Length: 465
Image (cartoon, rainbow, N blue to C red; front, side, top):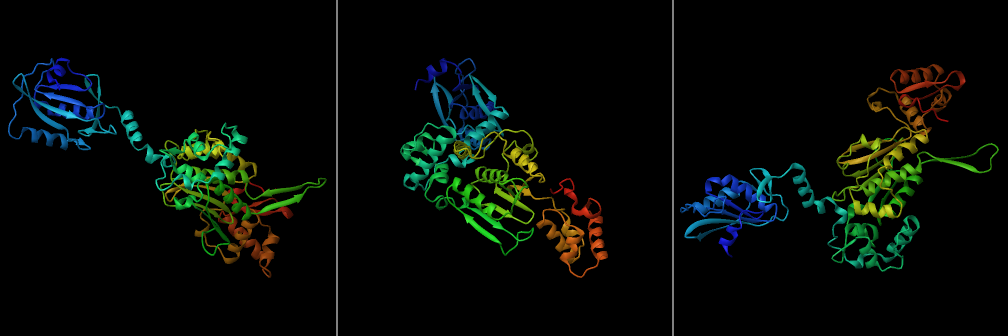
């Protein structure tokens, strides 16, 4: 190493001169800058012009300098410090290695090297460095599944996927392509190891690796999550299989009306909730969940609503308000989202929540609720809006049973229906019970004379057809 030659070339992106140790604060800032750029060397005892002027070195000089550096850098830097003689003059050389993540702070602030200057790193640049460091952790789906091998991949699932992508998106990968080649072209192999997305989509048994990817579905009696279940199922399998099976479970556990209109032959059918909205909410829950969480996606079907909950919060900068307005797609699991896009399960335009709202409105249903609750995100599809303070109101047993009837009849009850629920009660009792619920702002009276009925007050604009 020709130190004289290095000094003669002057300061640069990797070389810095300091006259003495009195400039220790600037030395430490430069250490941060070198570590966050390409590494470099600091020559202490050399003037800015490159003149070697020597530096006084006592018994504890190097130890004190090393301590100053470690105490004022975060993460702590332990540079290589040596003493060299140049022209019979002592010079301290501090050699700094490039940091693997470029996140070294000096006095709590990040610095970088630009040319021969040490500059404070901007907030946005530093945040980008943090994101780069943690990108593998942020994107669960793009990481290698360490326990899995290519033997865990189901070739038939890949073949089905390629046929589907050809039909839906005209993807130019023939279904006869080998599994390994297909996974490579879909960016699902790293060092010949399948990624987490590859396992979730194409493994023979995804839950052997990710038990949290199960989906727990339940149909409850009433409006609370209490046992016994009317129906319950834990759904496993690949992601696209889970989506289809979860949709079938929900449709099996909700009602469907059927009728033939006068003058027409074809039978008309209508579900309690729009199937398109159900499917979209299921896909969103599975595709955008936090797979680092040990929790499952939960599907809860009640008499008055369906709650579809997934672990994980909205990705910034999205807010709950944004979901009801025009917004961009920000997938939590971009690799997984890309595969679902290729088979046309999603569109990746950020329109999913807007579509759910639209489909519910088209069926004269209340607007769905989007909420962050218990460490996760939920979509709530409602047949109608039951007053939130219902449990706090003093209701007699007849009124409570009548409310259950209103729920089962899609938000309505008449005087005559109330009377039939409780044989033997007087007309005055019927009227008093209903008037009391109107007074407590639970119900609202709709219509006049024989066509009068009562419905939940929050849904008075939703008149059943």
